[in-house]
Image (cartoon, rainbow, N blue to C red; front, top):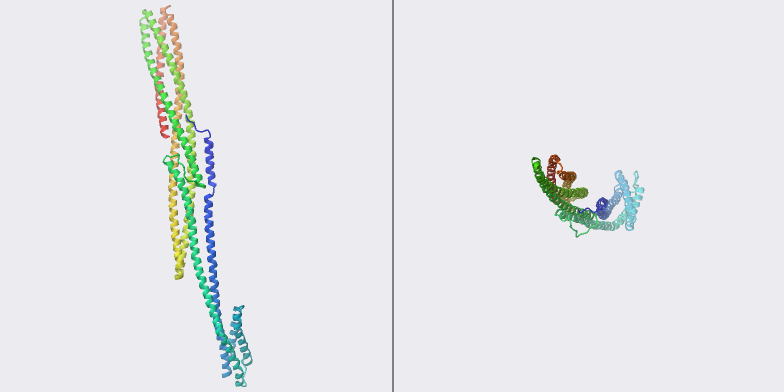
Length: 582
């Protein structure tokens, strides 16, 4: 019988160690971490560029607001300075009025505030500082005229003389103001136009950067996800090819592709499992053939033994008849003596032949016992190997569940992306025409999220199918283990029966030896029959008595031999079942 390799157990342990080490390898995790890091870097870079250009837009917008505010305050300042000059002319023309004097004081105060505020705004701008110096001079002139002629309670002694003194200062001041007004107005308009142009340019640039960054932010992660998904799909296909080949009965399957990650370890473990299973099946088939051969040989020997037993029983019946005739016809002692002597010699020859055949049966039974013990050891090893293979497939099922959990993470990312795109669409709708381009980008993001969900769904379906097939493999291993246990139990029964056959053959050999001794005694009695007829009668009676005992022993042995034949037939059926199960 072909035995398992001596190092099978150590080989199985090394295979389990490889499976355990495979769990701690992080190649796929490293790829996923790299994918997340790449997405984070791309997102951060895109966000930085978008934020930077948005800040440019904000700064230009603030600059435009400052220019518009400066123009507005300049308009107020110009209005105040003209109102001050007009009020002072009215006072020197129509005379003192308290309301106008109060308005003049208030206008001077407001003028001073606006002037100081504008000076703070234009600080560092030499051109505007030069232009607004005329407004400072105008304020000094009007302040001086106010203190000299227009303070509350002041009465003009000579209105014409005061008017002649005040009017030239007011006219000259207004002329100076008018001379710089056009230049200041032109300068401010140019500043506003320049700020507006820079703002428009910044908005255009920001829009382009935003669209480009968004597209880049979508396409690059999508490309990484597609590459990662293709890598995982290729690994699953690698494992599925081997599993499908094993399901088809091709345990010699060889992969044409090579990987260097966890899928390679799974494929290697499956390949080693297939090699181990193939060796087990071959050993099982060879054991079935050898057991069948032994059963056939034993059945043949048992049939021959049964034939010899029947022949011996027939001889004993004949011998019994002869003894009866000897008892009835004591007067024919010589003739009967010759017949008994001849029958005794024939019986001795038959007994010697039966003894030889019984010894052969005993030897065959001992060989059967040894073979059954070897078969028991083989079946025990087969059960252990089957349990190891079942645990390996269960470990693979757990890793498939971890991959399914990873796909759930991808679903969550896709859902968050879809929610982000929906919020972006809402904001784009609120923005109106300015958000149309961003709405298109949001729509594309939702479409990408939907496609990612579909990809994840298909991947999970494949993993679910793989999980179901793995469960079927585990079920097949369990069924095979049950059959192996049943075969082991039948082998134990066959071994017990072989042991019984051996013990019965030993007992039969002892009885045959006793029978030979009895035949020798019969021969001695036949030699002394001439001496005394009475002794002959007594010897005949004694022989007849022993003959009945011997006949009972032979009949019992015949029944035992028939039972042995049935047991051998059962052993043959067990061997055939073992061959079919392999």
